[in-house]
View 1: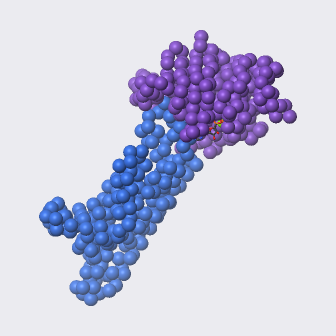
View 2: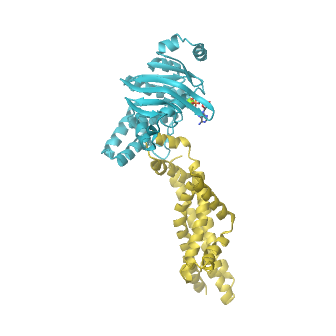
View 3: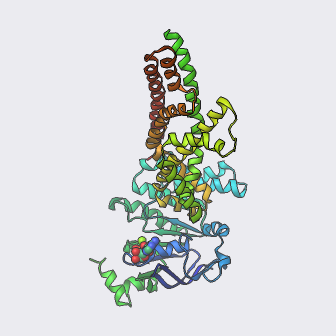
Length: 255
Length: 217
Ligand SMILES: Nc1ncnc2c1ncn2[C@@H]1O[C@H](COP(=O)(O)OP(=O)(O)O)[C@@H](O)[C@H]1O
Ligand SMILES: [Mg+2]
């Protein structure tokens, strides 16, 4: 089943065109890795999917529901965006944990607020139990009552992943989840993401970890200058890149 | 004699404390509203709030106090009740507006100092704008503004003495009264002890608050 379909996404900042005619789709349980040099528009694309930016053109469809159509203002109502964006989760490069809350509170806060405002009928105990379960899955059982400043970068990012998972997104997006980490801490975060891939989570991962992308992804997209230069299975894009720009980019990583 | 003076000054202190707390009661929330006003995308409101802050910060509080007390009467609008209650009300209104404007600038700095990623993290998790403000931004803002706010609030303690210009019997005025009635100078200086005690208690409170907020960074 197709979970996500993005079509002809275009985004300008002022007169600068940052994304140009981006189209791709994602099947249930698939992992899409997006690679590309800095400034190629990867973050902007994830931000468009998460409604942090509004594309100037294009459509976004999730599970056959048209969430966004740049040509149709009715799809852009503030009141509905809040519900629509919950199809997506986003893990930021620099974590953005809430410093005044413990690891567990970071994970449960949004769900608790949701239970209050939307009357979902969920009890606070259930939400809490689920938060504990998620943090345990992240290997942070003994860190639940620590505040973010008491955690290492790798631990913070794992809390951030648990926080995103708590909202049960259909598609989980990662924006360079290990780029702000010391090299010795990237492993623990990649391991967690890998285990999510093994559980058949649908994910979009922007990363510079090429080995990892090759291992985990079902599909790789190489972006450059706001366009998708090449897209295909990892064996193709990494093993046999067709476009010279892709080859040039990958050469920098093979040292 | 000392006992006599002390009890009289305590009466003045009560008025000073009353001005102080009433001003905070109104200025703390009003300052937040003005802060939002100066940050809104809606230009007329933003312009209005910026103009208000400019006028209030650009003129002496004493002038504002006199203006609030006398100008309505001059215009034939007798909005203040007669006697002491009227003087007190005018004082609290003038002080509240004045301090709200100073607070608004501190609040704005505190809000803008919270990284934008905090708000975006809340948005992505499906929180509403008000949930993001009250559950995420507010606490981080409070932590940031405690030092500048404590400065401003300590200044307020001493600014209450300006109220004597419209004959409010606050602490300094009662100290003065002994000079006029009995030719005594020392009661005026004695008021300093009360101000010092008041500010000392506030200092202890703010230090406590800062320590309380030390649990996160
Ligand atoms: N808010 C913004 N305003 C103006 N230009 C922006 C903004 N955000 C990103 N850009 C520009 O868009 C381009 C793509 O940025 P980004 O999506 O962050 O790339 P990447 O994540 O691939 O490094 C860059 O040239 C960047 O300078
Ligand atoms: Mg980026």
